[in-house]
Length: 438
Image 1 (spheres, rainbow, N blue to C red):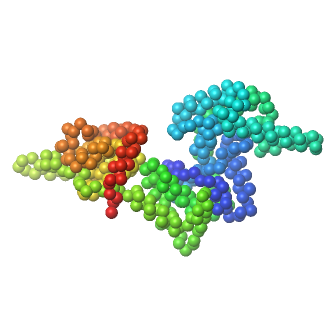
Image 2: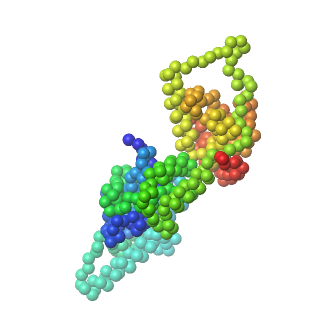
Image 3: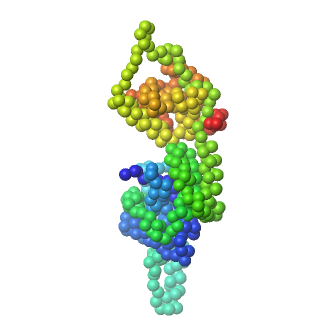
């Protein structure tokens, strides 16, 4: 089975407004999505925080064979909201460092001494406390008039906040709840990964309009993201959609920004993206053949090399794996020289690293490996990429990586190293100087 890949988050408000088959069921739709995720949250954390079910955004996952795939609650949205509530500035991944930072914030919450501190350190929790008191006081007023009142389950959280008029008690209960959220959050992710909104969407929503909306989100992601590997993956999905679109029907929706979206706008933006993302050209051959290394014979007789079918198949697998490795890496631009795709091509990364490697050609099995890949900095690319292999081998500015053993393990740390601002700027300057593929 194909692995599912997270593509984009989509707005619950927009799909209900634009894609519902029956506008009269809008309220029921909100109830369904909210309750579905609320049950998952309660099952993991054993606490119902009823003023936030983390359903404003839901996630879209696809496989290599599907355009949309599966839609389910967004763990990323839950995590971003948790970070926001904890008033933490953090743009890293969901790892042990994030847990450490969140728990540090939790220690600060636990030691809050007065409402002024709470408002400064945790403004969203302070708002919950104030809103809870207002709700609770409203119930008391209602009770004094009618002699009875009932706390609705959906207001349970505000009611609980209101009861904790003593700040110390409020802080204590919030600390307990958010410690669960922080420490057990990945259990929620596992639960959400096994859940799907698809049966409900198929029953009550217009599939074609939903797909049009998601394609619009795909393009918006590609227009703003720097994750090149994911952009290429999503661009393939957009192309699949355009090719499969039923032109006998005409669908129109309005996206999150209330902009009109139809197949014409999709085609226009897609073509602009293709132009922007196309390979870059240079007016020289990348790593031209040098006289010494281009000799394939000894003096006298010419040596002919025959390859068995087994050898060819093995090289084919290696070549395809090599192609996947580079195309799934997060390169910013791919550079092609006068040799086009029949020689070396360059991959430029945000951190200022350039990898030059032989382009794999299935008709020429030996291109699966080539002799080696060459690593250099963007500062030196224009000078060094014009030199032949022999000249590069002894150059201190070049790292030569032979295609043997786990050669990709040598390249991965180079291209995945975090970029400095200076390196990002130098990379952008180089790419601006390169021509687009004609």
